[in-house]
Length: 460
Image (cartoon, rainbow, N blue to C red; front, top):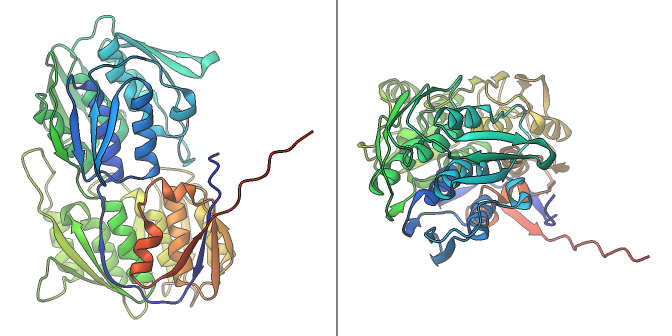
């Protein structure tokens, strides 16, 4: 566990009001950085959030010989032209699941690599079979070395191939798509993930000289090339951060304008907010957008692709008088995102009536509800189904963040609760939110970070 044992102290009850700038996407930045290993020249990435997971991924690349330089607050240059080591350390890789995406690119750049098995949030079954089976299909021989808790990969005879994912996987899709760019011949990836982060990565790789078609659709075609060049690229905004602040407005009887949002990436969450009773206004429109209008937008939303550039707009969220109960079912994009399920679960804990949440992706994502129960929440859950009976108000107490998005949900609960809430183990939250405390304070929240002194060494 990291040494950072800081806490958030939250005095709830203040309506949040104002505007907040949404940072670049964490998940997109991680994929873009890992894919940087496929380049033979430096790449410059902007709109990169300087958060824990991003810093960790950059540390992994720096450890194996890449030159890393932050040239501005959210702009980083990655020079992978002189990789000196093909084995990243377990200390870094074991802390974050996305780090496993260096396996294929390193094998193609170096001929072989040994990459430790990754860690990350404990959300249940998150198998790596898709990654390993897909790389094997591409002729990159992968063998798990159990005594080292690592995977050894050798690009002995890479060649284009057809691979169908048993079920869509975001990290699996970005991993195989990046790797296949350097694999000779034609590769077809079927039943892939459709998330905006997939499209973002394909756009960057194509600017580097890759030949990728179909990103954002269920089937991606990749024609391998000999080398990829450098480029300059701006990551998309973080739809999960935007959704988190949207829920913050709804939970605190507030009004927040989200700046720097791609509405098409957030339609399912905005539709759910509207159904709960929040007033949603897109892009400075003179009138709010009704639930039926948002539903029509959602139904009309086609699959994203690498040729459709999405415009950035502001989204205004006004809280309802009292949130209404609803049913949420998580599915891969473009449906309701699992990474916003905990935040909406916190909102539903103070909604009128009984709400249901069906979690279809991660079977250990309901841990945060046990903490909200300590705050007076009335709920029950098993592996994939939660029933939440809203209460008039939550009560502040001490709770513990167990993962990134669950931790964010507890912060939201604390903002809406009566009294003082202490959120422990906030290093989980730091992994995915840049300057969260400062942004919330700018909106009127009474929240502080308290640094906990490191334990003194034990002498004998």
